[in-house]
Image 1 (cartoon, one colour):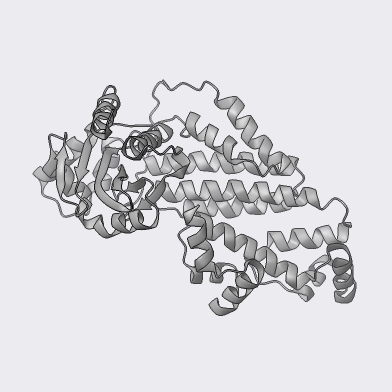
Image 2 (cartoon, one colour):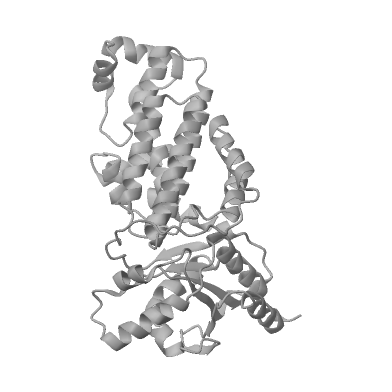
Length: 406
């Protein structure tokens, strides 16, 4: 079959059980075709032409499908039809919600946008008709669409994310008690495998993470607020990972401190996309800390306590004297002991650990280089850049660019 036949089959398949719409745009973002009966209203909601620069820039830098989560928490997937290095068209599926949204929540989302009563009523009626598609299923659709357009096989984790705008204040209220109809087959074993990876400090964790994300999109209780539901799902995940890390050898003090840090970061998230980024960052962080802990079996209690203190206070300003005072050792003794057992000075170890944490933040968040420098308590951006380049051979910006190409 040619590309058009593949696309027609794809559109028919995804519309069998869900009312998902399909949109085709020119490279200049002119709408060419859609099967959406309310194209004018949906186009107003989505405003795809306003994202022309974002989408075009993403095509130039990557070319994999782009997931866009707009200010109403609707999710869209953009894929690219290309000839060589030239974009011939942009194909979009959506919108969809990842979880059920109550009418109260939809009223809250549309509040404050200066809409007329009639328009707001029509908008909410349209929003109520938007299908709820599990995260894993929806992103698999994106990978399938990419295959139809390019013949290239990718997995759902290869898709890129772009969040637009911010959410209004969360809707308060208790969760509705409704029957749970989702299937949980295979989730228990997949979660066990994923947590076992943390417990073992196994760096080959991506397959396990991908497996559980395909089986489950989080807790199944319908809260009426997708953002709150996403936060609660990740909160549970953080707790499970912290306990697995303790079983793997990470000190309880270290694990609980990290848990509190990620829970606070999670509560500050404004979008579902941000929650997903925190989940990925947290999982990788716990796993790598356990891996590192297991590599230090031949060091003394003194040096291990020093490493644990540095890891636990990686976002704070620390130095040799501060650590020596905290652990009740003399500066001279701690410095000599650490250098002898670790083969590196404490100050160099602190710098290397901060750079490792910076690499994690550069890979998994959209925070700027300056923001990361400030978070990790470097005295200046230039000092951060010099330290990062000394350890990695790359500037922070160049490192992020290289990682995004992978």
